[in-house]
Length: 145
Image (cartoon, rainbow, N blue to C red; front, side):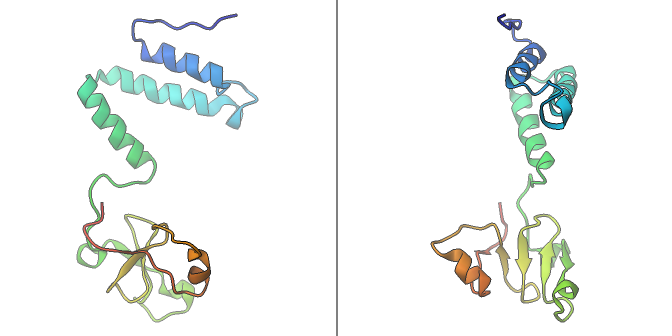
């Protein structure tokens, strides 16, 4: 049996069709089909908002970034904005020596905010051996896009 959706641009019909093909609405799929149902519910809201081609791209981009715990503006120096938390106590280090950005969870400082590095930054060959020895840092500068 061939599955069909309305050709006239009905986003919900097409999305439902794609989710059926992927099996995302089946009770046997991840989370009992709830993922597929949740996607359709989000799309219903999106369709009801009536975006044009231009605004829909902006909304999808911003939503995708924010729903993935991302940022939509560059990160400024956390020491200037106060957007950090002190993680020193978890390492048994003196207060305010190990800091973590509250806007990007992979951004740390081990020198009280003088320099910052991203633990998910670009990796180089054998980086993990240097990381284990505490030598590897993917340092960043601000503003960080």
